[in-house]
Length: 266
Image (cartoon, rainbow, N blue to C red; front, side, top):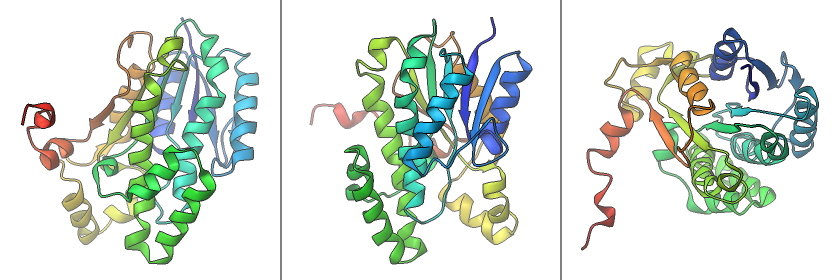
């Protein structure tokens, strides 16, 4: 049976690839992006998030089966926090009533390998507290120190997002309503956002040092799209709160073989 999906970032990259897969299966896709989508919205703005949620619910006839939040930027500025974190969490929360009206509601977001990179705790905690003004103020202060410090806006946005997914997924709003909520963390995906960086050997070498991918190297957007489709399908009944590192082995390379002994007796 055909399902109705809402996809942010649907005009390019992972969002476009995911929309194409779903439409090829006969599902209805309501796309949200800055331009060229069913709903044009700037998810860095609270007013646009709220308006997009209302419009998406209207276009879906009040029932949304799946939400896939893939819109994001990687600029070393506070706007990255606004889009990547608040543009995801606020929109998903606003769409909860329409998700609850589905017989098999599902949601997934796009995090990143950057969630494992160094982050500024103060920035992450401000985001998780829901204080957008404070979060952006911290982000602006980091950006003022230059691109290297400003990059914490990106890693922080993805760290906070993965933590929010773990926190929200087991809450009454999500698990209590029977809605699996999860995240996918890609490695280096070949998209318009990364094309310029990967264009030169020097740029590619810098990327590969930060995100080593021994399995098949840089990945196409379709490799993430297929995973997002399964996570938001009725077949996924019990996966909750996970950030799945679909990354060519980058996570296993960087964190090693033991991510379990933290809970062993000391």
